[in-house]
Amino acid sequence: MVHPDALARRRAAYRRGHAGERLAILRLALSGYRMLARRYRTKVGEIDLIMRRGKTVAFVEVKHRADLTAGIEAVTPQAQFRIRRAAELFIARNPHLAEHALRFDIIVVTPWRWPRHFADAWRAS
Image (cartoon, rainbow, N blue to C red; front, side, top):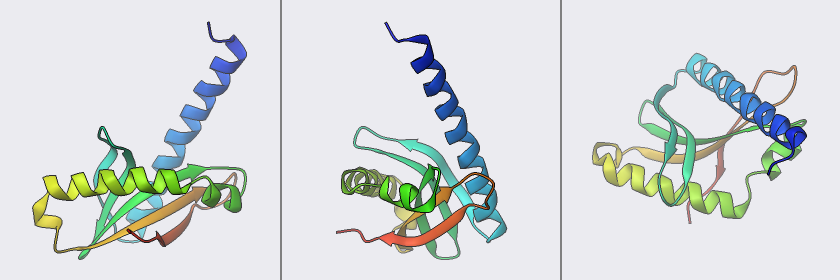
């Protein structure tokens, strides 16, 4: 059985995460991006946001953390691998996007700050 305090912390983190995603969407929309998918889930991984601007498709990982460094470091090589695999499936299922430039971005949401967008945060290998 899960301790009530642990359950309350999980629920609060879940709500913060969703609020962070909404802020990230707003941040990107104001920069000219259009949302293609949110919380795209596959058996190999999940992508928080898939956004498009012009001929670029950005696969965006959103992290809500106390500071920028913690947010960036939270996207581990293992997470990058899972996101990359999910992105490959997304493109396979949406072949009309295959000719677009593909990019992996991170948005870090910190308390009382505008979300920071790190475009092209890592390369597909």
